[in-house]
Amino acid sequence: MTEIVLHHFDASPFSEKVRLLLGYKNAPWHSVQIPRILPKPDLMPLTGGYRKTPVLQLGRDVYCDTRLIARTIERLYPTPEVVPPALAASVNALEQLADRQMFLAAIPVLFRPEGRAALRERLGDDYLARFQADRAALFSGGTVSRPDADFSAANWEPTLALLDAQLGASDYLLGSAPTLADFAVYHPVWYVRGNAGVGHTLEAFPSLMQWFERMRDIGHGQPSALDSTQALAMARETTTWQPLAGTFDTSLGHELGQSITVGAGDYGVDRISGRLVHLSGDVIVVERDDDTIGPVRVHCPRAGFVMASAG
Image (cartoon, rainbow, N blue to C red; front, side, top):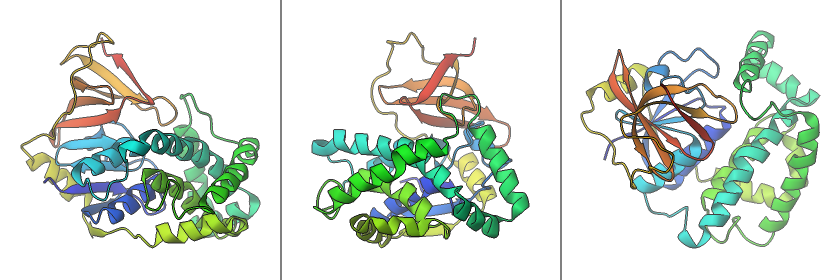
């Protein structure tokens, strides 16, 4: 089995979703720390421009977006199962709730005066200003704007109250064992809980906090530190590709080998250019050539990503 390499940074909430999932699977993985903001010079050769965090690497195959990353981990380590077929629709709905509505609603919470003060103390005024400028650029050009306090007020606490009520009846969101829904919902809660200025506000939801502690205790499994140059060498030296699942979807008129661009549609919309090598109902795979490591295949989910002919 090709070794798992996760490109991430410690404070990344979406990375925490994946780190905790790897811990639950008891999967060995390599940890490559990347910058929180651009530039990310050792990540771009792998992704071809995709800048969101985290990114999963298997040799010279690269996986974008935690929805696809999580299902790739599930394929590699099918037990314990986190997307049971009988709960697949519920898992998907809660994952979307967490990754979109809850994550976006959490951002203004962190920038309330108490939260901003905690960020300033941790990052310093200069880096905080650079971080905010980077995130403003991240939310430029897509279908989703940077969320404001009104969006947060309408979605954050009301959603936490619903989750708190549901978790009062079971240990995990969909029963007696964690599913991918739990790992998805955990990450925005973890994001807020880790801020010394606003983390205490979550204590108003006791069942949610008991669940949070159960999830936190899962841990991150078996990470080993890896330098980014070593990760690039692993890609360069790998001679095989990961399997491509499903039949090629011709319904959109795209052809195998066609030059295309693909990127997220919501935010972080930087485009990846390359040759279309697979298009299933779930996944878009683009093969591109990099001057330093050779050919790389970038895997993106169909849902939430935009694909176009490059001419």
